[in-house]
Image 1 (cartoon, rainbow, N blue to C red):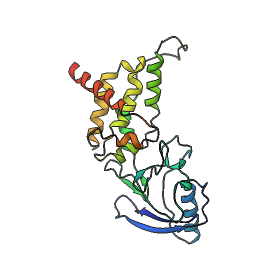
Image 2 (image 1 turned 45 degrees about the vertical axis):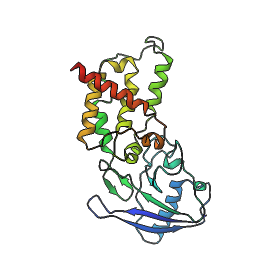
Image 3 (image 1 turned 30 degrees about the vertical axis):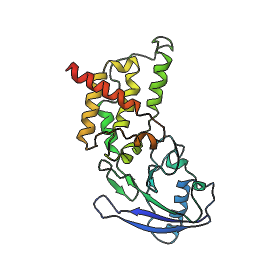
Length: 247
C-alpha cells in the first residue's frame, strides 16, 4: 500500500506551523499507524531530514499518549480505539491522510504532533485523588460495595486522559475527563468523604485553564477511545450543584 501524508510540522510552540506533504509506499495492511510513521521517520533520517515528532509509549491502547487527529477524527477511523490500535488496512490504498495534533487552546503544540497536556495533570492535582487516611489495604469484603456501583466506578476509571474529548468538543470542554475522574471516586465510600470539595475544585481548575463549557453534543463520548459515557457528566453536575447548595 502507498499513501500521501499531509502532516502538521511546527518547530516549537512559538513558531508558525504548516502542513508538509510526504509519501510512503510498500506499507503492509497489517502495519499500525504509528509503525507507518516510524517507517516515514526512518526514510526522513536517511535522507538527512528532520523526523516528525509524535507522542507514543505503550502502543497497547493503555497510556493515551498516541493522540493524533487523523482525517479530522480524534485517534483516527476507529471506534473505541487509540491511534496505536489503528492499522493501515483501515485506509484505502493511495489515500491522502491528514495528520494533525490535538486542536485545543488548553493543549498548546510543543513540536509537530506533540502537545502539552499538562492541563489535565493540573485538574487531577486540584482534586482527583483521595487524601483521607484509609490505613492498610482492607480485606475484600470489609467495605461492602454494590456490584453496580463498583462496575460504574471502574467504567469511569477506564479514562486514560488522552484528551480526545476536549480536542473533539466544539467548545474545547474537558467535562468528560473531569466527570470520569469525579464519578470513579464518587461511587466508592473512600471517595465520598471529599466528594463536595473534589467536584468544586476540579471544575474550578478546568475553568481556570481555559477549557470551554459542555453543551452535551455527545461528540466526546463518540470519540473516546475507552467509550466513557456522558452519563458521568450528569453525575458531575449533581455532585457540583449539591456541593454549591451545601455551601
